[in-house]
Length: 288
Length: 284
Ligand SMILES: Nc1ncnc2c1ncn2[C@@H]1O[C@H](COP(=O)(O)OP(=O)(O)OP(=O)(O)O)[C@@H](O)[C@H]1O
Ligand SMILES: [Mg+2]
Image (cartoon, helix red, strand yellow):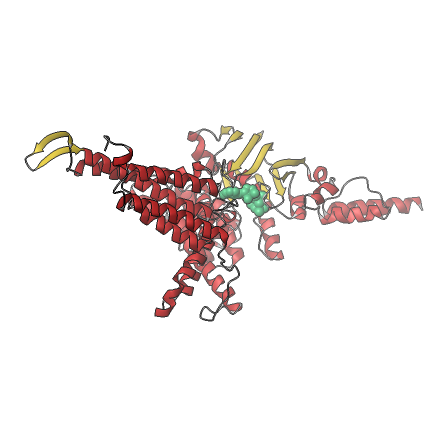
């Protein structure tokens, strides 16, 4: 079942002024339940604009969007769409404002008008899920945490609302390699345990290739490709033209092919490449 | 994003008026505004209208953008006009009604003329002011103001510091707007409602936006101060400008044009004592 359906979506900023920008043009796609959906595109290609439509932070101009069967055009759906689409923005740590971590995580659930016990339960669970020990962190001020910890608190604030769809805009940006690895692992864990449908925007093709079931490639507000990582990254030249590139594994494969090796399939992750190479060397051993 | 958009209503294009020296534009705008208050006759208003149309044509700004800023104060203008209509009680009476023994409601011809003139004056004033903001970037305006205030250095007025404060503030307005917008969105996504409840509840609901905004403003200020220090910025030294202001032939023509207009208004008022009597005999 499709949880998100986007049909012919177009959006223009500052319409009818000299600053007019066509951020999205005729974008259509749908996201299935339980899918890990990746969105990639160069800077300014409209990714953030697109996802801000998913929970009605941006008013739809033309086209149609249904989230869990509810149209974003109808005002009465606003609350329930907002609460079922959890949004983690670029640099989410800048939205922290309460004096304790606990209160900040509780902000979303409180707005949902849940009762006190349920809020406490969710805050505890969310903090533990993102890997921050409740007893250690609950009473600390979010402003004295490290960047990575802040980001976890911000993500916990969204998780505590128990959304059906989790949307993440470049969550790994600005973290050190270990921090980004941790955050990506966390997202995988969240998908498994809490929120099966995930939409992830990323500039890192390796991350996207290993995580996503399907990828949407945007270029200047239009859909360039839509498909599985293999389907998308076999367009090696076009992806480079779009300044996005391909995963490291695909790049290595390309180099090997130039040297005369032949593969039966595109590889997008290190595992796949290793597998292919093993298969090839086994075949060569047979032939000898 | 907002950062691509200059703050204010600057209309990006290249035109005669855009390319004028900001100092000249500031001085001419002041002259124009002063002149407007000396207008006495409808004929002068007509001349002002023609003058403004010519200026707008030479600025290549769509008339619609100019009218937009007029629209913003329309309510104020109408309010002032109506007050004027009711409280001027000299001249030939049009309508009169005794309300209490100490106040007679009275509309007079003087009141009507006063209201019309006040309305025109205010509209022209806003038009003049919006032309300068539509055709000058805030940065150039600050440069112009700094240059014009330079004589105050003699009395130890910190002209350069004020100017750098102004330009930094202007530079950060779009950034902060952008950030406000993002923070509002982030909190809305967490279910915050900003437009419900009474005044106190509303003010309270702004906290989730204001706190992150202040935190980031302080962080930015800190970083900027660091960056300026690291580049050995020193406001007291004799500094040169990257964009030097230079007067050109355009500025001369513009000055002559506006001065000509102002002269006409003053001549109309003080020499002909109001041309309306001559041009529209019998009406006024
Ligand atoms: N608030 C705004 N006002 C005007 N134009 C905007 C606004 N926000 C974005 N834009 C423009 O719309 C286009 C798409 O922007 P968007 O933020 O969706 O891109 P993005 O793909 O998320 O980029 P990034 O990877 O840098 O986050 C860009 O050209 C941008 O300049
Ligand atoms: Mg973005």
